[in-house]
Image (cartoon, rainbow, N blue to C red; front, side, top):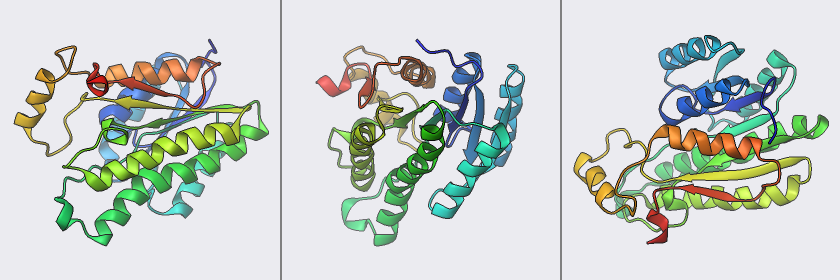
Length: 244
């Protein structure tokens, strides 16, 4: 497995929740970490301090990833700050629960722009730097709705399914210098504003009879970052839910 010591990895949406767990796990392995945030400045500053306390370089950048120019500037700024860019974790996403008949064109555009278009343009931007050096690794964060239909998050499901195919297609395009994979978590952290009763029912309907944690996702990301003979794959971390 490859060492992450001295590597530079960008984690979008790394200020809190699952993204923060990913950033911390990468830092434990010696990687310097850049994170993006949009509305969580205080969380981002706190996460950067925690990362630095682990003995690595860290920085946070504001980025509204519905704006492609901000994506391009962020990637350029990360490369300028560190002098290199070895990894990208496309983690930042939104998850709107809106009844099918109430989804507006604006809802659709916001979700697709954040969850599918932005990872594409982050991938495009970082790959230019990665291909100019000794390569790199890109990991996209999916969820169950990328392959299991849901009535509650239809437009979200479409965006994550698009990101799954983006993973496979860019893995082909960017090989052999850049590896692209995805992690597909099951229930590891209740969505903000989620239904607690529905969340508790998920545990009963999971073959392993327990819920996961953000750290489960972070360890899967770490594995894919380090294992050098895997590309174009989706690592499912869901307690068996998608095999039911």
